[in-house]
Image (cartoon, rainbow, N blue to C red; front, side, top):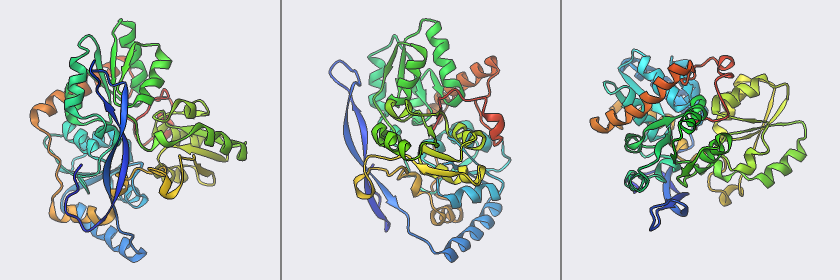
Length: 387
């Protein structure tokens, strides 16, 4: 990532980037650096004025807003108030495809906008900031990944949703939430060896559950990778009655301490349905807004990361999700810029791996597209979930 000219403050972000070795394996990694913009702090009056402006602009542009669980609470509320949705990346794209609006505004990170464009190539897809990216996406460049695949032609390529359109175009399967474990079990039963990308923790979790032969790309989510088992265990001792909710992109020693391991939707459902009054949550703290709405009266504690303030890399919040703000959302709607484009051929190739997943799900009678009905969704997730 190279910073464009901007008046906003920038922060440097460290992330894990796999290194291809001489034998074309991705068994090692290094620390790489990127950047993220820091949105300005707005007053209450400024926020209210911008929300009113955005409501008018959405209607005037025949646009619908879809927001990820990890973005700012104002954007989540605005999406639901204006007839949009708040969900994970695939449901955001599915909702946008089925909604009659001709313009879809995606509050999230870039691969989510690309997925929306792949599923709705005829629609205009806008994003508050095209520079909002993802450490899993950054850590899996398309050319390096293609070389990795070329070096292992005997393996079936399975990629997680948190990848670019170009990486998806090289994959045999894309997986997400409820279907990831079933697809890997299916491939393993057929005797297929798997090349998995990009998240090593999620891949390791699935490998442990299935016993599949999986060659793992060594990427990680900078938010979830920072959760630490030792600190989490100490926090649990301070809150012995709390239930621990963990996203499977977290390290194995964190997952081992969990009462519930699952996707964003499953963790919200668990917060609603479990009898506990207190929860320790090991995922991006943007989800706490939805959890507090879904389970009023319950107390949510952020799981500890490696360090605090200036000493932590993410402090449990994705710096690129934080780039989505009321101010740049209003500007995008007014000017119509920040449109997502996907090369049509890459889009068609990427759609193939998504469609294969959907076809498999239909045959398995499994819904891989979560809805806003959280209670119904509780049966869909197998402890494997998207960001």
